[in-house]
Image 1 (cartoon, rainbow, N blue to C red):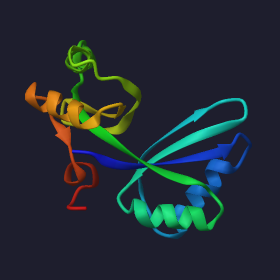
Image 2 (tube, helix red, strand yellow):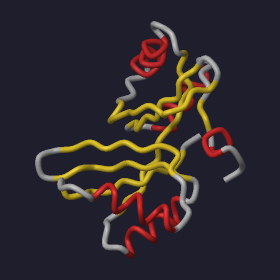
Image 3 (cartoon, rainbow, N blue to C red):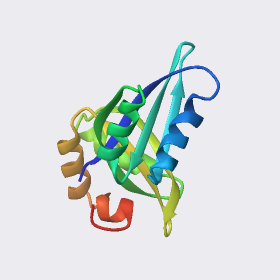
Length: 145
C-alpha cells in the first residue's frame, strides 16, 4: 500500500520550516512525520499528513511549490539485522531505494520506515510475499483515510 508524501523545496535560511509548520498548525493539520534534507542552497522538506490535499493547496496558496510522491511505510523488526532483512528482499528483486527515513513512533517491537522506491508496486509485492508488513492509511493515520 502506498501513501502520499508532500515534498517542498525551501530556501536554506532561518524560519522557513517554522513558516510551514505555522501555516499547517493554523489550519489544524497534524504532521504524522517529516524529514528535512539540505544542500547549501536549499532544503527538501518531506511531509506525511492525513489531509495532504488540503495541506498542498494551503502551502501553494502561501507561495510554496509542493509536489506529491508515493512512498511505502514498512514495519521493520527493531533488532540487529531487522533492516538488513528488508534490504535483502529488495536487493533480490533489484529494487532501488531512492531515499528513506524513519517514523518517530514504533509499533510494538517494530520500527516504521518510509521508503521511496523506483518501482513501488514491485517492492510492495516482494515485501508482502516475504511476510513483511506494508502499512496503509489505517495504520499510519489511525483511521480510514
